[in-house]
Amino acid sequence: MEAHRGMVPRLVCCVVVILASATRANCKPPHIVFIVADDLGWNDVGWNNPKMATPNLNRLAKQGVILGSAYVQPICSPSRASFMTGYFPIRLGLQQKSIRPHSSKRIPRNITIIPEVLKSRGYATHMVGKWHLGFCNWKYTPTRRGFDSFFGNLFGSNDYYQHIANGEFFPEFKATSWLTSGPLSLIKSSLRMTSKVVIKGTDFRFNETVYREAIGHYATELFSERAVTVIERHDKAKPLFLYLAFKSPHGPLQVPKRYERRCKKIKSKSRRIYCGMVAALDEAVGNVTKALFRTGLTDNLLLVFTSDNGGAVYVGGNNLPLRGAKTSLWEGGTRVPAFVFSPTLLGKRGYKHSGLFHGVDWLPTFAHVAGASTDQIRSIDGINQWQMLTKGRLSQRSEFVYNLDNQEKNGAIRFGDWKLIAGRAGVFNKWYPVMGEHVHNTDFDKDNTTDDSTYMLFNIKADPSERFDQFSLEPTVAAAMVEKLDRWRGLMVPAQSADSHPRADPSLYDGVWTPGWC
Ligand SMILES: *[C@@H]1O[C@H](CO)[C@@H](O)[C@H](O)[C@H]1NC(C)=O
Ligand SMILES: *[C@@H]1O[C@H](CO)[C@@H](O)[C@H](O)[C@H]1NC(C)=O
Ligand SMILES: *[C@@H]1O[C@H](CO)[C@@H](O)[C@H](O)[C@H]1NC(C)=O
Ligand SMILES: *[C@@H]1O[C@H](CO)[C@@H](O)[C@H](O)[C@H]1NC(C)=O
Image (cartoon, rainbow, N blue to C red; front, top):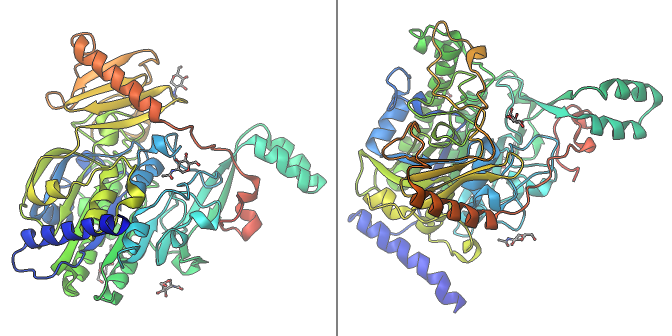
């Protein structure tokens, strides 16, 4: 019985590949390059906004399939967790806030992640970029979770040149830490009791070793250079999985002048630097693509590009015509630019597919095309969308949960065209204009007016900008949606603790954020 089960996906793989390309006699699993941008908003890419300088991304998107309804979580760690595991974060305990560098939140060990699935099919697996899925113990880090190599940040919101990440420790931490240190620090600690303490640490590694050579070099260039090396050195006898998780264009606003110059028509300084960061990201993807063609990996390649959440309007990102921003449950926080590209595997391409796709769908789709056994991923939320991506078939997804969070007392779900929001959708509730000459970071008011007890109902197809709440106009739909939301609530597990761990303090490890304290 077990052997039989294991065989099925492999057969499926052969059939799919033969149908997709009549000239391909083999059924080798394809190389998979999974590129994630950070905080890239709906209106931050050339195919939605011609003012953005993204010629490489535009070309790939237009020759591939643009996913017009690609959904993710509203913030970083939860989104990345959903990509890697195929589970909604409510089922992993990762539904609240992103992981801070001194918290023990992580992907649980008993959840299988993409590189582990692909490794079972003989893939070489490499990760470049930002992890942000927990590192309190080595066993939660990329090289112990199925990646052959890792080059980048274990945390996530570092600066682009020094690769320093800030931890915000809170008084409880200092209050316990003085117990183990001298009397002077006792005085210092009690002074600190009144406010949060920011502690800085370096965060850049090559595999498990600190990589100080990175210091002074721009992260986007380092990442694309390493990705090109991985591609060039890859032994083509094996399939390749490359997870390339850029930090761009997440804050802080930093970019070499040569990229900013590509956006010189933009008057707002913040938006211009932001646009330059997107241009650097675009060039990085261009370099990676060139390497894929040069080495011939494009003969059997699936390239995926997606953002992890909506644009941070207060930094320079933009989501128009969508409402809201990163962190909110509005479409502007959760519906993002995404596409797939492949010179050989897409039976239908050069168009936009508007079917529902969620970040949890990547893992089962990759598992399918790799011919991997599904034994370990039976209970996931993701759906294999290979037919949608490659043949333009209807999406297999009709429903998903945007998020549910007991701390924020909010949540949202989607069923078909309908979206139900319970409680506050977030703190950015408006339709934010692109930063202009006279619009400054501080002008982005955190509108926090909706309240806990309300529901809102939108028809996203008819009203993608979420302007017309139909909750009281459509009582039958509303009641059915509330019932569905409650069903999702029943699947939610308690959130993992976000407490600060004193032993995470990088000053205990030569100024470096280091695993091994939980
Ligand atoms: C992982 O472990 C948790 C806690 O023990 C358990 O509730 C969950 O069902 C497990 N998940 C899987 C996929 O094994
Ligand atoms: C990291 O690991 C990979 C794969 O084992 C290896 O090729 C590479 O040389 C390692 N890098 C360093 C700096 O050790
Ligand atoms: C792309 O490659 C060129 C040529 O090697 C290099 O000069 C440039 O810095 C690379 N760009 C990025 C963003 O890595
Ligand atoms: C929004 O307002 C409510 C009620 O005043 C408050 O409890 C909540 O913390 C606010 N949320 C944010 C993120 O400011």
